[in-house]
Image 1 (cartoon, rainbow over the protein chains, first blue to last red):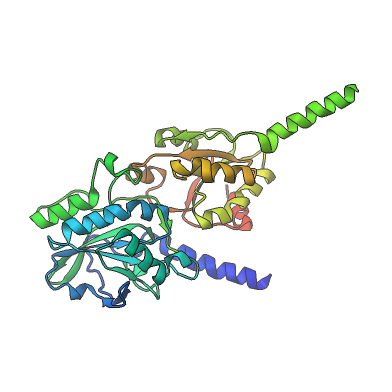
Image 2 (image 1 turned 135 degrees about the vertical axis):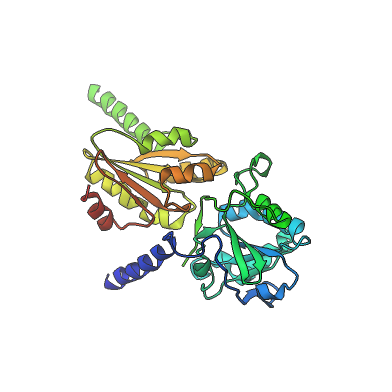
Length: 200
Length: 158
């Protein structure tokens, strides 16, 4: 009983911490680079992309129904924006002990089935997502390459309709990246959406 | 004989209210759910946002049921489900039936999440579970999970 209770205490302390709003990046912060393993076995860092004007970093996974609902749209974003200088970098943040369906093998399988063309990295020691302040999947961070480093320009959802891509009215991520590419200001830097909390 | 008939009727009725009754879902967009966040009765209202696909939500759900049972007269628990419409029949209804949920279940189906999440609470980033507890004099929002003890302790501050 004692063990269960202390386990619960441990679980609750870690489970609550990332949900606090004031952790992680605000718009305008310089984001950390990382070196995370990709599904092809290589390690990927933002600094590998010398020509990138910025990045669409998506914390996502195999097992969350919202993440699954957005898979095709994430792939479409990479197809459209990687050639323009804004590649998608997907990062799987879940603890694979609690979500075996998000293991590296499962990620490789899913990427193959769906034909992902973007890097699908694993935050294996769960050290990167808390620095960004990601709390759920999918959770998007748009970074703009600057002299200071990658600056956070947008945090939130991909668009305003998870259910049906055809019914989307506002494409938050596309609007933001289009504005960044044109060098014009844009209004919506933060949005909120329901997602699956990142498994610790 | 008369008693037997009565007994049969009674058994029949109790079955109906039990396992054989179809689960009827109350599905709303946010405008339809909003009134449940502003009820003005004399009770304390405990509104939990959950979904059958959310493991920590399912884990704490029995505590809300117990709270409702233990504080029948002073508390109303409302379980706002964020399940996907295509899983109402395959996941949500069977779940409600299996666990014989006694608390009121309201289903929220409104894809424009950025428009309504801040209206529930500005601090909410969209991860679930979250719980809102309110009455006429106090209102609190919790981005966390609860044990029964914790839930009851929190309720007692109202």
